[in-house]
Length: 570
Image (cartoon, rainbow, N blue to C red):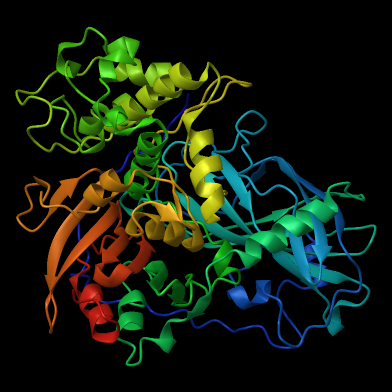
């Protein structure tokens, strides 16, 4: 299988607040008329260009409309990435993948026909699968007869779910397209493993002009999805003294530690500019984020809470051993319910150490390999439901069990994640929310890992968080079991399990801790992922999103800053 990604300690508390000096901010030249980087001549050559400001990839205010529409496909072959890092590459880590993407232009936008993640595993030696987002087309006076285009592109590794945020650009005429240049200047990845680094590549592109039969439908889907996005405003509209922005803009390991920071208030998103190491990201709404253990709440809790609404809350008390044959006679799993797995109180052996995470779960590919690895783990003295013990393996067991349960209810070949997508994510406008699945043989579908691997946009993350704070209701329809949802986000008397951190408790995939502000003590319920990915649920249905990978685990200053600007006290 080759050398794999080193696993992460998904709930690590490593903090880098003691850095002796902050990285220097990016000070490279921004795009001005007429451009001197990513020129037509450069895009027709094969030279790897220097790292440039992201403004060179964006449609400038002074640009004219494209001289030509774009309708066709771009095909890429496996190509070596320029990716300087201080360790050996994992298999395929320095390879841009082989894939084809179809586009159509409309009103100055470059719209991909495929909105789902492009899985490259069976056609490429690359480590990366691909998200392609909506970009732009335009024309610049210095480009002669060429029109210009760019589009957002995110690379997701297929074992952990780290994400590299990239932008691609090219020039074209109706019959010819140049090479496509890609630069990746931001990521949510494991810096402790040396994964921090800029990528760039000049890609020879096979261009095939064609009229797409589904072009009108793709345009309509894009317009509908855009209209369904949450209203977005500048964070400065509520952050009058810049206190929240100062937190999001803080440099730790890099000059752009936070990929995106936002506050949701009254169904409106107030967003800090999405940063990269080379200037603001040109397509912030398309930026995807590898959120690691935030997945447990955003996907794991979401799925079980929906099954409880669909089949009744008795699904919480279903025994794992009734649905997982490999664990049927395993003494450690006797009496363990779906709820015990969700709330990390199974009483079984497990942790986030290498021997319990990487060797058991990450190193496996198929669902059966993963569950058989888990069956080799032993028992802990505590009975199910007694003690909190954080172990990602619990969530894969839950995923496997939920899949078998749904097939018993609905029939073989019905996938529980399809039910979640169709009946929860699509109604709330987050149908493109993607999670990592097991890697099965070609033609066989995998099941979600649930422990890590979600890759939301900001809009998707905010909508899912809002569904939780609304008690599982959307547009008057109960999508998640109301009582169980309220309990999960600590709206009941039980304070949750002690976690070993005297300030934090845990239940049903959510954490809780209090933060003292100038006016009150704010009880914060939150999703947490490795590297300090956080979704914070504050009183008054205030939601704070901060996605990063640079270990600033203590969010107290952020909560205080938000409380100084918006009503966050009970």
